[in-house]
Image (cartoon, rainbow, N blue to C red; front, side, top):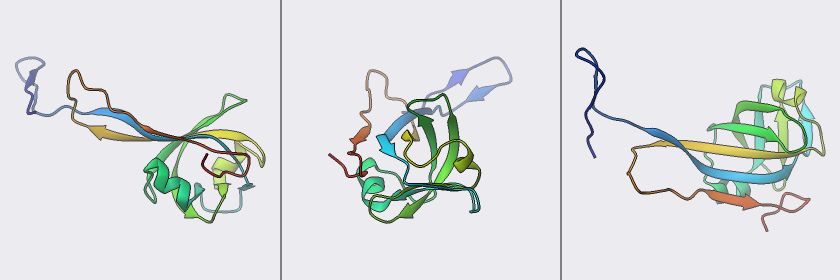
Length: 128
């Protein structure tokens, strides 16, 4: 849909996008926090695939039991891995429960609501 929104005589926008939740890892357990590493989060490849998260995609990380909220990028990891690296490791420690949220920009379809992939895991970060 090509929308033309007029915001005054000199400003005209031809496209509009909204940022919507694409996928979420609900309550994964941090398996390692290493500050001596290039900043990022390492996530099990299987969980990335299930949630539709791409390598090096920007994600938001929210703590379940404390108010920390950070933004970083994803590095694919091994089975069950949820590692916080570099500066991200200063906000969370091994054993913490976190939520990982990935968003995508889309053109709005008024009256349509996208449904994100929300993946729940067990204590070993295996999808349930």
